[in-house]
Image (cartoon, rainbow over all chains, first blue to last red; front, top):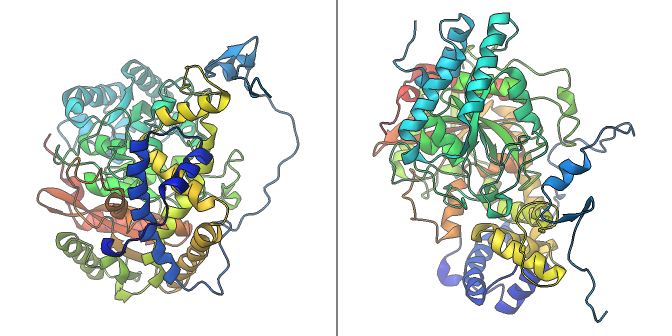
Length: 106
Length: 492
């Protein structure tokens, strides 16, 4: 665990703003400021991983040894359209309704 | 006759044998549990959803099954499901505003197996939002209180499940464990909690947090009861591609050899998990428990080193948020769940839905995971963490060539006060230091009670090799038989 006195800023506000945009999560400036300090604490602590010698170690891809799970390509009964749409916030004529994907000027 | 005054106080094995002998009915048992809920739930606040009418109806059906002779050891036993497991027609919120009004059109395999066994489901248990947290304070709806001291947290993320079982508001619960989310609250609430081997219990219908680490498991009042629940929920499921196919026709009865004792078992104490960050009363209680194993005929090595386990928490806080940032991308306000209804573009709709719908811990982890997976950082974070994962896994594999069971405390501290760690995420994360390594390695582990300090329970954590659940349960059962910690109940 890292001593907080040695903490350095790993992620600045501008990078965090970019991460928030990639995450598609709206944020306020207050949230961003608090997150910046918390995430830097966490990243400084996680930084200890650099000490671990992994020079000849393969990355784990999956924790159990199973691979390539196949099944017969058979059609089976699926949920009804009504069941699927029951949880959709907006639907119209049997379809999920979404906001316009393209801006008007495009 | 009855060992206890009130039916709700019984363990699953006690109730099951009285039900089979028709000395009690499931309706009587379920009514007793409901009366207990009415008595203490306003203080414990372990539930997000209760359906008394449906529970009584299921209990009546269970009594009919028992009368007809077509029943299982779980028929008529009332229990509770963590609110991240889907049940058709029953609200399933993950304790998140983003799923506040979600009613699933399908049922999780583990829950369906319980229903098929005749178990009576009373309701859904509170949790940290999307199972992210160690105190259940991250629930978007309300906090749950520790039955042993209502000012303390019940642990998390399955804090509702553990508090409910501890308070007698259910004979068992299902929880889910990604980094300790069954075992840590079980330790804090003085009950038994088990995380099975990755792939033993189907994750179909468990709302995903970190798919390579998540595993469903039982919370019970004692080891036997937990083994009885595990018997029902484990096994291969074609609906979960990570389910272990080797189990297809090969599921052991976990209760069959549970009373065979620990004579000749080799037990190792992981020294890295007894650092100065572990509180003295916890260390003392766990060390005393290890001595008891020695007294019962096990051989103990008090100084086993798994040096890479000290990196488990750091690896976890890269891997789990990375997987979460990907899994939680599905909450876009389009297909189900909360949807922001203001004026704006598709992207604004998505961003506001997620900005308003997710709580702060969930956002923190989404950002952390998005950062770790973003261009230029993948090798330094995600790949490095997966390499450390390999190291931890192989150290456990080597250790289990020499030992049957490895021992650590379940938690470094006693249950802490509500509000005391919520503003310091890193401090909160450290409550899972001892439990995370088992998730990283995909191996089973169990927490059971081994003492008290300041009137608060202390958890003993036993870890086994992959698919060694029988041995693990046998060791836990032997300890429980030799002690009476599990017979103590909180005064609420």
